[in-house]
Structures are given as C-alpha cells and as structure tokens.
Amino acid sequence: MEKIPEQQPGDCIKIVLFGPESSGKTTLSRALSEYYKTLWVPEYAREYLQEKWVTQKTICEPNDILPIARGQIKLENDAVQTGIKLVFCDTDLLETKVYSEAYYEGWCDPLVAEAALKNVYDLYLLTYIDIPWEADDLRDRPEQRQEMFNLFEQALINNKRPYVLLKGTVPQRLKTAINHINNLLP
View 1 (cartoon, one colour):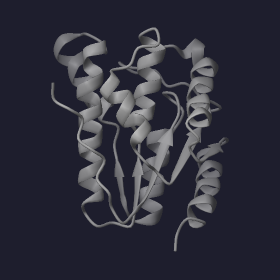
View 2 (cartoon, helix red, strand yellow):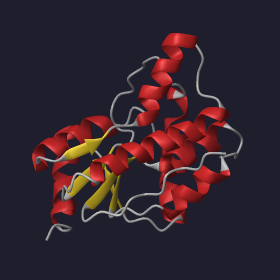
View 3 (cartoon, helix red, strand yellow):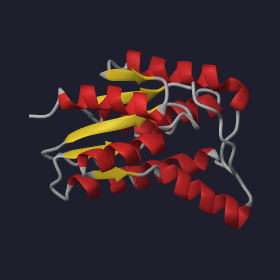
View 4 (tube, one colour):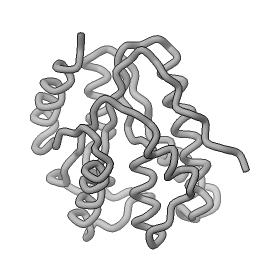
C-alpha cells in the first residue's frame, strides 16, 4: 500500500483554514494570500471529488480518503518547497480525518489518521457557520452545520492545536486573522 508523503519541513509559517463546508475557508484563503502576497494551497478533495462527480456521478467513498490525503500533502509540500515565508492551507489532513469519521461512522484510514496527528502547523483559523450556506454539487448536510462545526472545533481542542475562531463578515474575519497572523511574523 502506498503511504502518504511526509509533510516536508520548510522555513515558513503554515496556517490552516479549518471548518465545515460552506463556512468561507476558500474565500479567506484567497484573501489572505492576496493580502500577504504569498501562496495558498487549495483543497485537493474539492478538485478530486468534483472530477469524480462529473465523470462518474458518484460521491466520496471510504476508498477516496487516502488518495485525497496524498493529493493534499503533495500540494502543500510543493508550496513549502518554493521558499515562501508564509503559506495558507485551505484544509489539512486533520480536516480530512474529521470528515471521514463524520461520514463513515467513526472510521478513518489509519494512514490518514496517523499523518493528520503528526503534521504540524503554526495556526488554525476556524471558520464559523454564520455565513449563508451555498449549495453546489459536493456540499450536503446544510441542516447539520452546527453539529459539523462542533466536530471541527472539538478536533482542534482534543489535538491541542492553536486556533482562532473567525466569525462575521469576510472583512471582519480577515481583520481578525491578520491581527493573529501578524503576531507570528518576525
């Protein structure tokens, strides 16, 4: 079985946008990377699952979790190796683990679970569900937004990850995030 690539060390600050679907992670990732003139790592699962939906009209299955994790780490490692000083990740393997456990009755591929707990980031920006739900081909469970948010926050707490809760409008979230990120910069 092919393993998940190890998270590559880099001389950069790594920040993860973390939270349930349709909570503004991608919008904020893009805005922060633009503000700081740096790279952001997109969510590999979105590309992977959208392609699966378009070509097969099927949704995520347990056997998709490992390829998603591999793809996510590859994107992150590619960004870190560019020599940038700050990178924004529009998800991480802990998020993949939370989704897997929520959708597959507590199950997560052991390789993904191990990597999720081993990988290190400087800050998590936890996005709250106080923005409108936006439906698309992949999103589901709009009626379970609070339940999903609680799972994400509990994962950060249980794994002792440094995080900041972002609420409000995009400008409000951006301002809060920038204030915390600036504290990490040399």
